Length: 406
Image 1 (cartoon, rainbow, N blue to C red):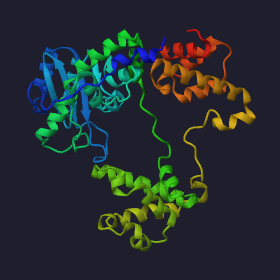
Image 2 (tube, one colour; image 1 turned 120 degrees about the vertical axis):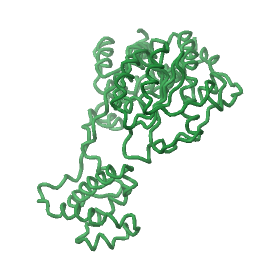
Image 3 (cartoon, rainbow, N blue to C red; image 1 turned 60 degrees about the vertical axis):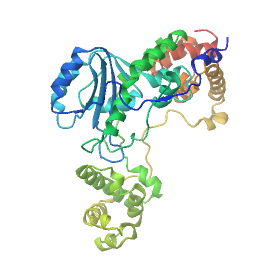
Image 4 (cartoon, helix red, strand yellow; image 1 turned 45 degrees about the horizontal axis):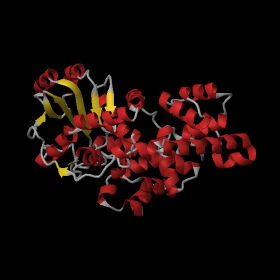
């Protein structure tokens, strides 16, 4: 049976009707009246549809400047959490039922900052990926599955500005307007495809996913962009990076708005000898950049006075590779190359049979790792993948693809 073909009836073209206003009316922004919103949400029933709006590319942090929550029997609330973070503790206790989100991994970190943690989630994007939808944005799914067209134009608004316009509030409210209906439709599709358990496993993995570790030397990105290799220049870049981050945090703007990475790297590469050299640099001609000349020189001068032993190494690897690049395996590790070719082909064929992307079936990094390390038998194969984070459904399906048995 071609499983991919069996999913085709889920995906069909339909004329989408624009959804222009929330069906319950346009909600105001909730702030100091948060207690009333919490009382209303507590009186509602069932899952919470949730979304957040941040100010990426406008503000320094990734904090949520608006949290949208919709619940049956309560309606939609647009919560401005800034300045009332401590007053959200009762909300955290109320939100014990399932949360419905789209692309949950982008919203959960900012919700965690507010002390809001789900006990269970349903991610509509994950559901769509497991069903083989080609386009998985909220707008695409609302149009294809529900026949409703959602606006896109306010996704990159300045959500930190106040007051929010009626158009922004409409956009924000509509982002949670259809999540309950979308979840219901997707759940039915998952059940018919026998993939609901897959979705539950994937959603739980996202819910429990720890935050990524902070990069040890984030300034290396600018060094690469500006082709900086001299150790003294690298030290200057490291100090300039720290100063830029301090200025960005104080001004609540993205670091690249203070000075772009490539400019930071080029300034360090030139190794100015004096404050005058910095002030006269063609990289800092604008009035906006000139105002920080003293800070840039302080960072550079600090690097000039470091002993050679304190200078950063010319090269640095953030994370030690577990194995060499696959292209090198053929000559020195032919057994690993054979396993990789066998596994890669099996995953590609079976993913096509299932009608999903091969990276959804098993991440390429895991494919390479198991091919490199090898396995004694099918049980050892499964145990290793489980240890490295593969979900049970993935292990079962890949064993079918490779060994022709679950």
